[in-house]
Length: 319
Ligand SMILES: Nc1ncnc2c1ncn2[C@@H]1O[C@H](COP(=O)(O)OP(=O)(O)OP(=O)(O)O)[C@@H](O)[C@H]1O
Ligand SMILES: [Mg+2]
Image (cartoon, rainbow, N blue to C red; front, side, top):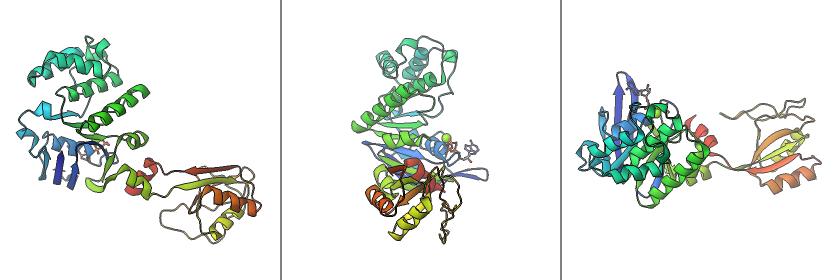
């Protein structure tokens, strides 16, 4: 369990983290999201006792990191995979960490195997690719077989196999009852990996929710493409739907009259064009959209139900 309470960190006049409160519970993967500079890495450093909070506190299993009796077995972390002495071999690097933490050689062999570096164990880290360094960082985090894992952008640089491997690993570690906190900018991956999401902006909490609840809150919609987009759009609006032009919609001649400008909604006029302009429809099923198109003599070139992606939800929330 990680408990962050009223956590604040100032760097000079920069408020990196501001009155942040959240819990990261065992048994689930928690994703930590926020734009560049939002304060994710700073929060992780504060939790790990690498920086001192200006105010508030961050506890791991009820105590500050410095007060953990057996830190390597309680918490494993990867903050910056690049911060490793290049002259050593992967094995020597992990062996040194293991020695410091009172962990046996057998565990070093096991984690190298786990992260897929067994074959490169004796190679100098200086010659490692970015993905190999990332795997080595994950190996170091796993070394103490810890109950709490904190990983800052662990997916960076991993190949598709590696991304899938890490997803499976983190989900199984959580299923064993461990606490897993990871940050990432890869939204699709996050939506597949994380049960819960903590979203911050400018050091402040924006959302603390389950991934499923967050996605459910953002209405799904229907994408319809028609050469008679303007007529179709009027008919759909008359049936109670809300219409937005889909990304990449073509420009044509006939603007839709009288569409109110809503805050934050794209209000480019929807026009009829030969190629078929795209409309994003909310408030109607794909079947209803198809029926209305037919009833109004509007040809349909594409008709798809779409779910809001985590990326879209994130952009909306953090706008
Ligand atoms: N050691 C430091 N000294 C001064 N300012 C810092 C320091 N570390 C972070 N900051 C500032 O704190 C803010 C938060 O940075 P942080 O690295 O925590 O963001 P982040 O959410 O991890 O971003 P990213 O997605 O880019 O990794 C930024 O404005 C950053 O410039
Ligand atoms: Mg960061």
